[in-house]
Image (tube, rainbow, N blue to C red; front, top):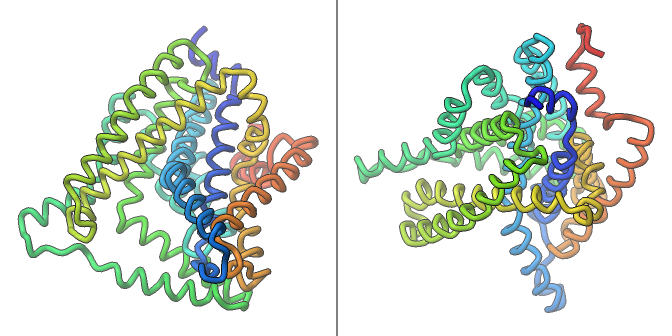
Length: 398
């Protein structure tokens, strides 16, 4: 069977929906711990000792497992989805690249909705802008795409600053004060109960702050690189059940832990002073590589376990969740704003990490219930369906 036929007969791959659902759940839990970017928490002295201890453990474990990894999985799956869509249209003699540009433009609209309820934290706008790279490389060879991905994931901006510092010890990193000032203004509005102003500041100044932070912090390079890795995973059909894919994921699970430890030790040994330029440049690169190695461990473990019927059964809810990932991602921001911010219940001052984590689980099961109810009579989630219809507007595709 050719790869094209395999793609044609399996346009949706179950493990991808489940893995995407896992990533969205992890993002939901992280966002709840962060109160959706509202840094307001109860005073530790007002809580019993056991709850403070629990808060510390919940925060450390969740951050260690998911921070920097959940969004990485989400980004790779974005590139993977493009690869499937492009291949499907290519088999029909069509170039999906230009249609995808329109699709990215539409994503800006969904990003605006999400940003309205998530101060300075929206990632969808960055996906929409950085996603253009997928169109640029869509006809490149696998080797060219891989090399480009590795260059982007090498941390070029951080290495630039590091080399500049080596050449001139007096060199200092660019000033971030302007971005932090904008963030403070957004947060000041978020702590008020003025709903119209909350929405307006979030979709204007908040989006600008989030985007500038990603650009100056080099996150756009990492995101672009992850998109390309996802594209390659799609081309190589590594999520399709096969012996070749199984062997590759097993090898990845052997190499990734070694790299994860190596990058952690390199960061600790070479950049012991967290305030130094080295720590803020190459230290960030080692930290990123460590998290990417851990991300590979999470993906590889999930994909291999998904071959087991029992694991598929206990993670079946994640397929519903992942199939409506856009709807769930945007709606979790609306839930979060209503629960934690002054425009709603303003529970942030009463919720430590443990309670916030529990609220995240409650939101997850609420969304699962809504997903199952919706998908009984629809093929896609409401935002997914709208995105699909608008993507193919003025097209012969049904």
